[in-house]
Image 1: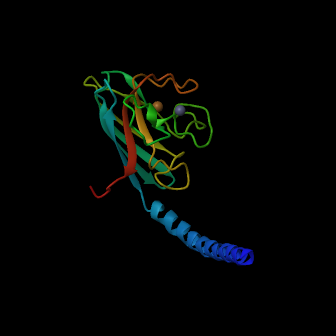
Image 2 (image 1 turned 45 degrees about the vertical axis):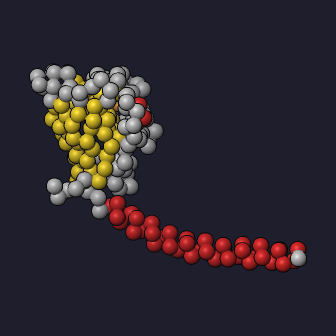
Image 3 (image 1 turned 180 degrees about the vertical axis):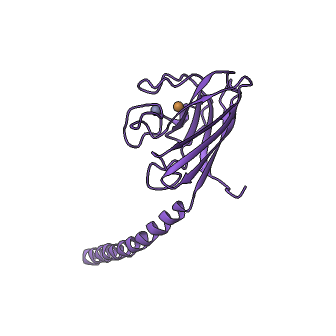
Length: 192
Ligand SMILES: [Cu+2]
Ligand SMILES: [Zn+2]
């Protein structure tokens, strides 16, 4: 009886080995298809919603242009005439009312915080929005330290945060205060 059990175990183990070899081959093929599917994504979009007690909201588009990404933001409900920090955060998770569920600044390379003028900075450091007298901001910046959905610090699925205060470039996160809007970066319907 023991021998039969042992044989059954050996058979099960060798079968699972064969299965894992063939699934490895499938995975190699799958990785390529997976990579190509993501490489085909050239534009992403985030719709930002106000956090608790805020009226800030808007839209941000991210378009892959060669090795760079063009970021175009249209945000309203800001403090008139004031600058507001604008970052990509680690998580595309806006579930908490204060936006803290989006985590810290997106920083896959382990750099220190900085304004866009500084080459070595968090990948998510996009600088500041400047509100007009109506509390609206249009902001465009082209950066080369992220990709929409490529190999270099892909932003798809991450979060976008607008802060109550200006990002002054200081450590660790620019002294930018609370989070007044949060959005999730998704695949854009570029035809729209
Ligand atoms: Cu931030
Ligand atoms: Zn940062």
